[in-house]
Length: 333
Ligand code: AHG
Ligand code: MN
Ligand code: MN
Image (cartoon, rainbow, N blue to C red; front, side):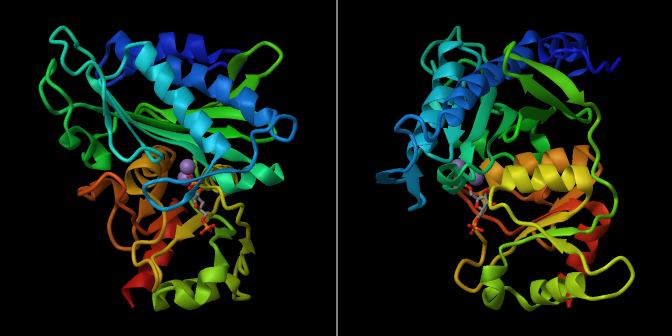
């Protein structure tokens, strides 16, 4: 039963039985993410007041400059999940390698690994624009009680048991799926609880928004260029509106509510685009499909791609089903 007055805590307990692998473990995991998200939210909200904006002068493994809040959010999520002894491993966009937890302890029976983009859209922090956190959860495939290996993290997206994001926007929301639809919860900051505000979220089948960094236009494949021209053409319900925040979480969230497509194609400089398969595309693709939308690399379903490395990038086309299918048609020619 979905009720708008329900808190996230109540929702998790009530729906535990419908998880594909029912045990309290996944519930405790989501609970920890909800807690860490509150702590990060508090810090994000102080940006501008205390010395937390700007970069720290370091780069991550992918050569991107790290913002102070990237590092803060990364530490908070990792600490919260490790301290509560809920998972057996974690991989983060901000870490070179995955972290194995309690891997030497044979009594260690935790079976989930988490992959996380602790702060998505971090270049938006300095200018007071929405940012997010993206997470993805898998069951380990190696044996319980043994150290997790890279194999546990390099699973296809279709093996995810849960995925979601937090959006630190005009209000803070946690949106997630455990494979049984997508639900959105809004944080009431006065009380510190999340309430079910967006039950059973669905992408409209069609939309009129396209989101792409058009500054890269000249480097896009011809199929993408043609699709963009199609979006801009005066015909039927077109031209579409162009909206691009530069934070995947925020662009996805808007498109899921209003109907739209998000594109981060490969380009002549970076054939696989920019977005990371494990920390960004897989969780968003799982959410999209659970919300009646679609996600592909232009040709193949994102969730069917077999990852070969932790920080792998992939072109990303995601959103309302008909729009993604139309973009795929353009890619074929
Ligand atoms: P992150 O801040 O985690 O590195 O992710 C930024 C990503 C994504 O959120 C956003 O949509 C995209 O990068 C923006 O890239 P461009 O600035 O190249 O458009
Ligand atoms: Mn990101
Ligand atoms: Mn990030």
